[in-house]
Length: 275
Image (cartoon, rainbow, N blue to C red; front, side, top):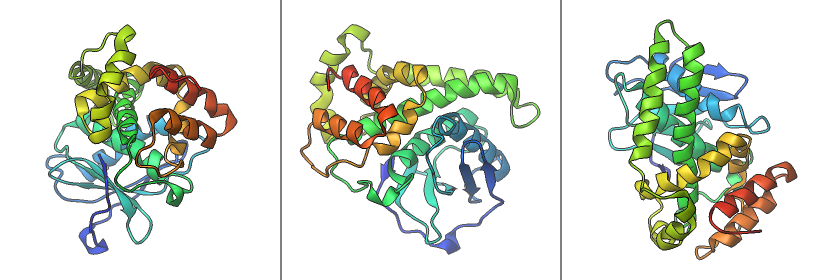
């Protein structure tokens, strides 16, 4: 979940060796402590792999270095950064909850794309965004997208010997999360959305609703995964606390490079909006 900056000092972070995945530009540092029976090295491998499944589709996007730490309450990406410029991502999973770690990191990595990539200081990262539920839904889609992709990737090649056995776990966890969504027939999605939009505008983290929206977006993302790069332009529009979804999507499309605009138009069509 993407929330405002929280106070943190460099003294609170014990830094381990940075892992870089050049093809995806995922640069991770893991803070020690709170993870239970799993090493920082293993956490780096899981998070880097989950992030790479999304970042590989964003070749023109720069995401800054990411500091991953454990927190006991809920996952969170801070809107501020550390004094040396690292994006701060907190994860709640621990021990051998590998699928949950991947799920949570992919969600937060999507928030990083939306609020912390490229010229990130131009993005609207404060409270009060009426269409924040859409970013949250993309983040839920990112989690399911990454787990499904990891299940395929790790079946062929996992980062450590013996880790291929986690591949079915990723697929099973993705399926479990989708079952928790509101049951929405594909043909009735627009009507369901119109009935629930007001509630999501008031509370962007109604997770069952976010997952229902995510499942409507996933076919677009899996058919055209470069759409993930469009997410990096989602918060560059007018800072209007009453902005309609139609205006929001129109501004999002306008802020995207031309090749990504058709994808944003298709997102609008999911909600019954034609641009």
